Length: 86
Image (tube, rainbow, N blue to C red; front, side):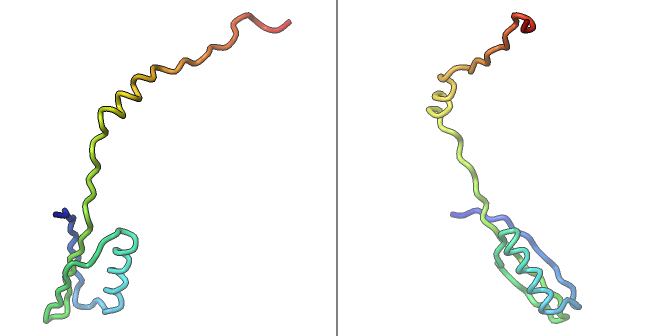
């Protein structure tokens, strides 16, 4: 089953329908939220519940870590210490 993160937005009764739509669109486009539930109260206020999927990253496998470690350290050659050219 998918795991979701939720965000609840309260919009006061003076918020126009267009302003509420713009706010929800911005959250969807830039925050990757989707509308889960929208409640319009009798006084005109709104409560919007947004959700987005939580993506968990798996651990690195031991073979990839061991393969990287077996390559050994990289040597950096040191500059020539023989002195100034002459």
